[in-house]
Image (cartoon, rainbow, N blue to C red):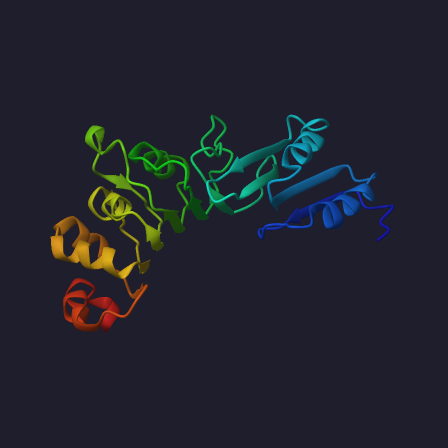
Length: 241
């Protein structure tokens, strides 16, 4: 590839990049004349991540953000993004990602995938999401860890104004309670959830949960409902029309 007159380039890669050195580095080395480079990259692997991070921050400390994260499953990732942030989607965001800053850099994000096998997501984390990501429409979660700060929760009415799709296949029960009992979901129309967690929510039969599920039109469960289909139908009237 030869682009001697290219002055501006925007690159968005949402999938994790396994061959960063072979695929991305040669491309960037050919862009010596580019004056405006906008990046959104996710780099897979645990080796040389810090080297990659330092190579970006060395030259563009103010306009480039770079976050390194490691998980208990021996998985590591490096996310590189330029400011102002151009994406509307963030994947595999943990408690350690600088999601909340004074500049509201990620305020336009509409799709968010949360993952953490090191630390649970607490109520304060979700309160900040509700406040700092006002346009969030799709939220997917992976976290099997029990919340540790349930006894100090001070608010039971977090409002996710635009959230329409919620995916909760691989979570601890605490997060279902977080959304259905301690949040307000006025636009929730799509729900994907682990069957046993869904049945536990239905069994408790709280009015707040009923209200949050009242507009759901599309319901997907991890396993077949079998004998529980009538109870679920009564809870999700629109989903079975």
